[in-house]
Length: 239
Length: 394
Image 1 (cartoon, rainbow over the protein chains, first blue to last red):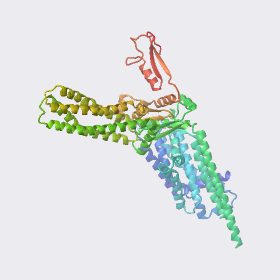
Image 2 (cartoon, one colour; image 1 turned 30 degrees about the vertical axis):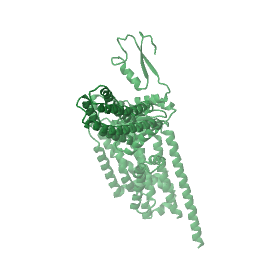
Image 3 (cartoon, one colour; image 1 turned 60 degrees about the horizontal axis):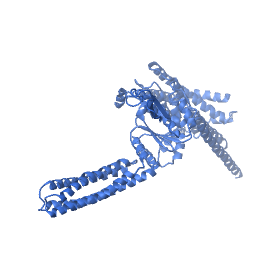
Image 4 (cartoon, each protein chain N blue to C red; image 1 turned 90 degrees about the vertical axis):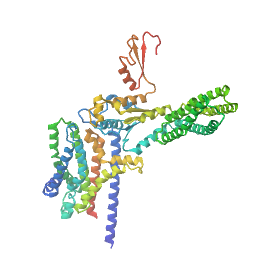
């Protein structure tokens, strides 16, 4: 566990040294405020439901920016050799990288707390849905970053891993959303696809409902992609 | 050489190993999700302060006891905040009970789904709809026959009117009226036909309405034209001052009218004898309205209108019409649960209001408790009143 924390800490520090992190930070803060003030008007409900839902879409483009360098950077600079020969297991390496990215994602969410303050100043918000909304954002972020960790282990090129991540996330969002409505797909398959739709699972969190099956969906799929990443890093040893 | 071979076989072994483990983990993830969905979907925690998405204890009790499957379909096109909340709450029924499935259709945008939905409704009543379709077919044949009769009689009439011996008088007046009625007939028949054709083409045809239309037009010719004119013709044939040749012609015409009435009467009585399809007609008329929630059970269909699901003052109705979003009080859960309860019961429960004096009625327009009775009737209670001074006990 100590190793994981060490890697995570190192990862967060190095993220704050890279320019791309500040670009993501700025875009995230700007995007969340724009979405928020779009729905900020008299007589509108004092909630962040719309903001959260917009953020989930925004995250498709921004989070891969954080995760794209996680492992591919180690390949590129050759430091992976050091990591591989250290007493660190591959699982610890992947988990540490992912946790570091999650830590940075938490930093991204901090500016949005200002928006909560704005609602509190102008209205009487219901804190239940706000809490579940943030829990949901964390779960979605964890899932997207796990996909990103997996993609960054595929290629030493950061751009390729960015594109791969965005493409994979789109499979779980746009593609599924559109395909599950196409009439040529049988009904059973449509339902199965709708179950895989990320934003559908997030919707309940935004509304203020905590559904354990949704949590299981996010946690299990996050774990699945982290498992894939571990297998991928492992494969470097025997390929 | 042998070195690369062993390396290759080693890679292959590792590769297979990884593939198998990935497949196994994927299967575990899928199974885990299926189990958790079945297990946890009915135990959602509502974190909103006002319990916005929580079903009431009564609803949960009913859903827990439900035996029959019910499908709830919402046909709501308005996108007001309140209506979305209504849809959300209805979705909770689906989450809570495995016997209930919920489908949301936007009738303004998803036209194919709407017509599919109408199709399934029609399918359900396929047996009762058949006699109706046959009756309409008979009715259309009747109209065709009437049209050909009229064409022949027109010829007779114009011959007679052109006859030099036919003197002016009441007879001529009557015949010209009949000619005028006949002249309109072609246009009328064409319109009726088009109307029926249009109805039959719609996804959920209004059979009863078409039959009514056929009946209306047939009985119009039967009574007002053939019946009335036929009687006069007979009288004229018996005692008028026209020449005998004309009288004979008049008699012939009246016989022809009489002959035409027979098939019409046959068709009319056939249409009247069709008793089936009452339920279909009722459901069809209810579903034709905009903005509603349809509950489809195994043996009955119930329709709740969206307007009834909100307590709305006239002021708020005006605001809504102007595109504003007034805050409405939602009664939908009460309505839907009431209907579900009614559907799961075999016999209707009866509520009797006891009335002390006929001068102070309990029910009816002046009834003091009519509001209570209305609500009970909405919840599918049978409501009756019993006056202590009248000895008949309901």
